Every structure is written in structure tokens, then in C-alpha cells.
Length: 184
Image (cartoon, rainbow, N blue to C red; front, side):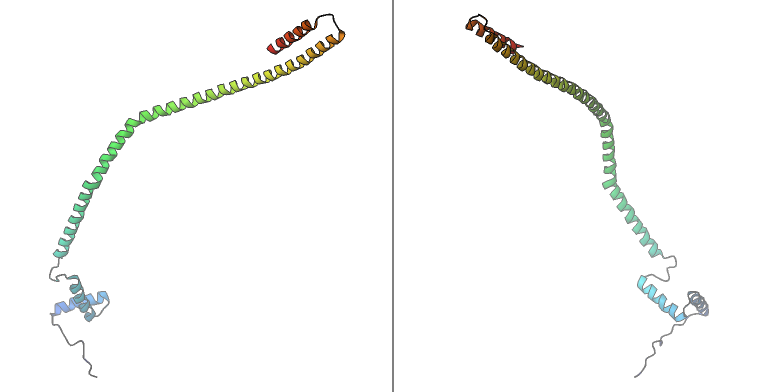
């Protein structure tokens, strides 16, 4: 096998450049050969011109990129932010206009709540009164029933004693008395 030396190319340059290359290699901690190979790779991949020390191409690209970003932001501002701000101003105006109405509604609701409580109190009072009346009516019916029993007992006993009054008059008296009792 024949071995080919890959280091067969050489570049000639002045001694001042060699001194700077040596300093650069020491600073980077590499050999001069590695530094030269890396410089070639860098300029090849970045497509930069080594003669352009101020890197004007990069500055132009950055400037155009910044301009594109700024124009995009201005476009978004015009399309989205300005309408959003105007819509928010309209909403704020509506909210300010609605605020007194909402306060009035709140007052009305609190008044309705107070009236509702008063109505509930009144209904409780009516309920109590109706319960008393119902109790009184039951008591009255009980009294009528007991009085009827006493009256029936009286009539029965009176007839047993045999007072000399006609049967029709006795029956009429009993009927009138019962009717008067029912009307109580």
C-alpha cells in the first residue's frame, strides 16, 4: 500500500503573518495547521469575505432583518392592537354608562328583598291568625256538640217526666232549640 501524505499542499506568507498566526494559535490552544484549517472551514460555511474586516454584509443582513421585524410589528399593531384599543375604549364607555343602571338595579333588588321579608312576616302573622281561628272553630264545634248532648238529655228527661204539653209543641220546641244551637 502506498500511503499518500495529506499534507502535501503548502501556503507561503510573510513572516509578520506567521507571527500573528503563531500568537493566535497559542491563544486558542491549537496548532497553526488546525487554526488555518478551521479558518478555511469558517469562511467556507459562513460565506463571509475575509477581506471585509467590518463585516458589512452581516451588518446589511442584520439591518434588513431588523427592518422586516419592525415592519411586521407595525403591521400587527395596525391590524390588531389599534382595533383592540378602540374596542376597549368602547367597552369602557359602555361600562361607565351601565354603572348607574346597575346601581339602580342593585337598589331595586335590595328594596325587593326588604319587601319580601316584610311580606313573609305578614304571611306568618296571617298564618298564625288562621290557625287560631281554625282552633277556635274546632273548639266551637266541640262546644256545640256537647251542648247538643246536654240539650238532648234535657229533652229526653223532660219527656220522661211527662209535662202536660202536646207532642207537636214539644217537637217544635226541640226543633227550634236545635236550630238555634246550630246557628251559634
